[in-house]
Length: 378
Image (tube, rainbow, N blue to C red; front, side):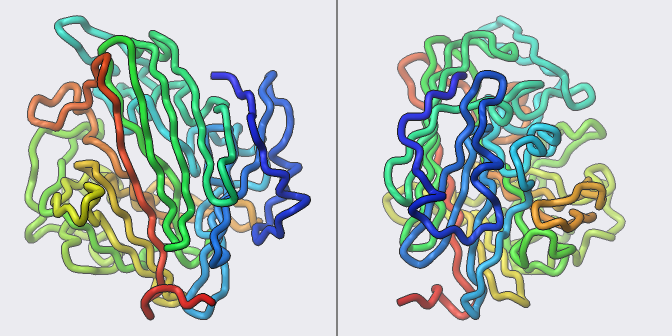
């Protein structure tokens, strides 16, 4: 995928930035690709900053109950550090297939395809050079909307079909970051796209997220085997540490003597969402997170059947973030809207097959408020 930037916004000249990031640290020519730094802002002062490298969300400035803005996504101060730590997937767009595929194998109409096994025996997040590690064509549509596009060629990382991909990011005046995914193919293939930001609503580098209060709109989840692959079962959350139907601290049950928590070294599981569609947009409320001290609230809405919840199990303090603070154990969480892991090999899971003439569509919304109600703005 080549980067032919069509309309970069000259942020350093005409926009006052809240972020500590410097645009010049993200604008260069890398391996023949022009890299760019895009800023989205809404009328209430929320600010989202992206790079065309992996469509990464570099910074997301959101106010607390007193109107104080902080960056709530983990990341780095320059492009080079993102490239060096690319397997962390901080803020990245993930595909062609988000999450794991067992043994890096799947079949379509009796033909088997072999993918890279870049996560033990499994294929993870698109392979060695997935969508998170390529440069996308960027187009700034307005002060609050951005579009990326590109083509993943036939047999890219082992996937069949020339896949045309387009992703829009919109920062609305309702304090929502709306992500709309679209894709088409010229051969039957599999597609599962998601966004992979690591969030800490107290601010990146602010310590553990175990005190964040989380609610997930799911009555079941997909348990995993020792290789982190779903067993195929849809298991009830009733009476288990996986019951987030009522708001509770993320850390409350992390120390429980439960085989699934031991297998994942915490939460790293797909939750089967209750599809309670609200309105005509096909979206349902998947999750709600509250950070009690700041009062920041993040709601996640989607039209996907699943939500991968990851509790920062492998953050170990060895990574220093953009503000100079270490990212310690459980220093962030991920809530990734997607289809289920290993769906191509699980007959009972919703299909991820995309045929020629069809269009893949998916929407994810991250909505921000405070625990005092909607953000108070003029």
